[in-house]
Image: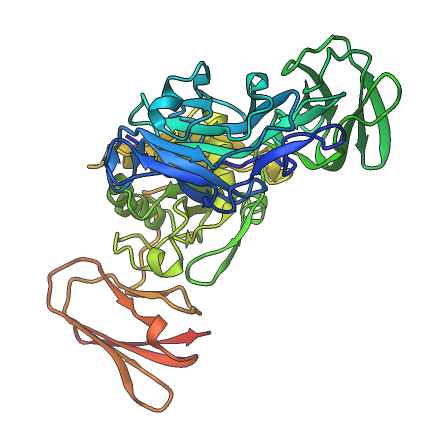
Length: 531
């Protein structure tokens, strides 16, 4: 069962499967709609093939579920059958498509592809032209090919994708389905490594690997892999003879930095036989920087904190995550004990749920007031980066502690990580010890006395918390600039610490007086609301 709905970072591919230099295309689908497909929910659970765009460069894809965060475990038998494809003028047709399991921690999605001259699922299932596989892990979308030469000359051919024989994984993604004649020389160039890679030291290099896959009518040899890095051209010669669907890998190394790279393939006669594909490649330090605005409207920069010598805990969560709710108050307690960000320890909560906007994050009601951040693609990038670094399994809550290298923040160290949370003090104690191990100058014993009243964040745009460190009766009024009371709170509860959430999202921009009576003491704080 998944704890987290991940959004995989996809690689930049061209919109068609392979170069149109020598290919006649009879059918092409990039899944901007499902109009060309008949959907069959054979298991009758109400879940079918759908469209989704996970961001990045892949665009919209077709997907089918074997698990849903709301519904739980599914056992799909979902069909997606194409409209009739006219191959009457074809001579050597092949079917191409791209496939990927969405959650690389739960990748064993099983599917089949059937091709025949009937749109009936029984006829399709009994076809002798078919393909089946368990997808497994991958570094991005994988290209598959199926020989359809036995259908050359047919006027009505149907292609079906079937997601079945699996359960309790996540999503199966299909994209860029194409039926084309294979003639002449054609190759597809794909990046098989990540577009962004990290290195362990400033002098290290990262390897970027590309696959050259032949979709040529005859065996291909004598080809050359051409690549341009920031305007500098280089060439590598192929060393293999490639049959249809066979590949050869080429790689080069890059040091720290960002690069514009173009790749292409030429045949032995010097003719271009691939599309020229452009990539933006990056080599980053083990601790990549990010700058985000929290749900209160305050800006945060990771390297700025690390440069000051602050230890930073990143808390990856989602609004639907029960264990995240349980961990938040205890993480917040550690944050408070170490000075609420003022004495060398920061906590940053990054949601990995795409629907978690500022309003959702600010209304969790979990008892945590350390900075949290609405969903941004950066959150996913950081999650996958650190999960890969420490070998995490993809669950949340997921925590990483970054111990600073102030002189070179990118080469700071991850000294603590945890996937999941043991409530009741066990994980809290581990976290406290991790903070002290990173920065021994911090001390729970030497913690400064908390003020009677704290108001944060201030200024703010939509949310603020008034914290009263007292077990006495509390009376709170918030008054606007013309003397109107816009919020009131009263408590007789015998609590040592009272936290009052002020609904700033309902206020207009301006200055407000927050009048607090604690027992016989009167305190006024000014609250600045910006919109």
